[in-house]
Length: 485
View 1 (cartoon, one colour):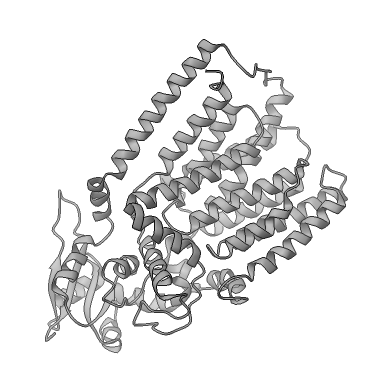
View 2 (spheres, rainbow, N blue to C red):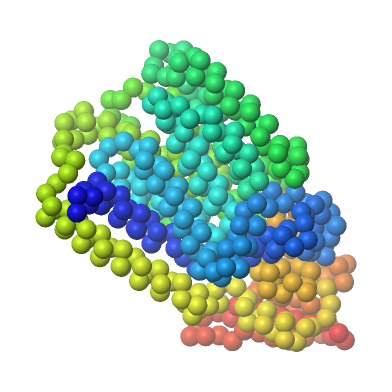
């Protein structure tokens, strides 16, 4: 019972609550092309040209997430969709608990801040390689914060970046964190504020240089370095892909982001802590990127959470509201902690089992993925090249691999070809020309899309399959074939 102190109990309960927040059914269509790519990498070797589409077949493709894909494929083979959910939760919880470790203050206050930070980041938690980026960004930030407090493990940065470069192109976030810390510490030192000593600042600069070299140890060499820059310069991304747009503050999913930002401003206002250029550079930089691209909200949450905890702890300490507590309470109190923890674990465990049941997974996935339409394809095998919904390209690659896709979530490969797809999917003028140009004889799209409506009215096409409406919900998928086969 001596082990169940209040501090440890709060930490363990936080792990449970974060797990409940992170465990969810994998419904993101990009999940599936990553798994398919992992399978091809393991069975056929590294991918250097596109093997999955007929519109970009044979064109060079830097599969920057190959390492994460192999891991995801292995997890899926072992535990199916439940494994993907657990992997996602492990990376999310692991990242947040790393931030918890480097965040000052009482366990209860830190736990509340961690929950707010997790709720902010969770909008973009899904079973994709970006979860490895989330975890590693938390780890890099923790090492930088530790260095500011005299615990120097900067030598680990090149190792982390070398691994990161083979998991996801989000390694650019690691360099933003290290670069922000380097500039911030130099400004702190020049202005007489608490900062790393100049030798330590030089060491950090050296570790950044070694990290660049470590990043080159990947199957694509120097080409990997250009991937983040090439991706953000694709004009069609911001025009058509939601996560590359600015956050929609009309939606409730952005409320934690707003609350975290307000809490950060409030804590900075009331705290008398010395100004810290490093924290300012990291928070303001990540905040700017979050406002530019919604997918960076998770990056902002990573940075803002420990900074908010630091400012809050300072504000409470200045007002004498942090009381010294005994490390160990009475055996009776610890016993109550243990009982409460067991109740929480059982509750979260039952919730997780309910989410991960095969029937629950199937029901959730049928709302977002064309599962029944794919069953039709695999049963009837209609011939011809396919035009498909962008949203479903990744799932079709995975579940109906006998068909080459027209497009999928690999935006770095398709680039501004997204515009051609979008105009066609909307059924705007010229859709017939695009389908003829690419010799399309099979179309798999949303049943209510503009193209579906145009195909229904065209004598050249026939409706081969359409999902039935269930409980008044909109029909999901429709399959059309060209008349004459």
